[in-house]
Image (cartoon, rainbow, N blue to C red):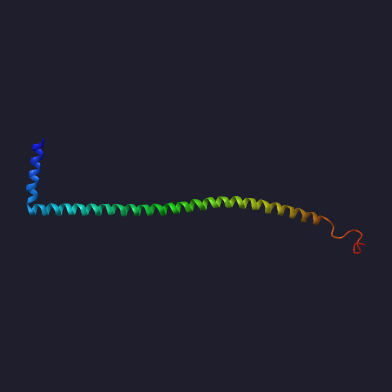
Length: 113
């Protein structure tokens, strides 16, 4: 096992000693590293954009839900108000009808005699 590791180590030293190969390897590693950083930055940017889009859709859905809930609550309040108004109108109409049935002048008034 040691022999294989030593042979691999010697081979790597020979390769590293050559300036052109070393420069090329460093260039390849640098390009790979830069591309990895670029890829990660692009993924983060895409994730942030998707997050903002979902936040906008969430706000729109929340607004629609809130308006629907307020509309239902408003209809409940309107129904209660209409009941109060209809009861008042019914009593007013009944009192008006009762008043109209009574004679305007009493039988003992001057103009009736």
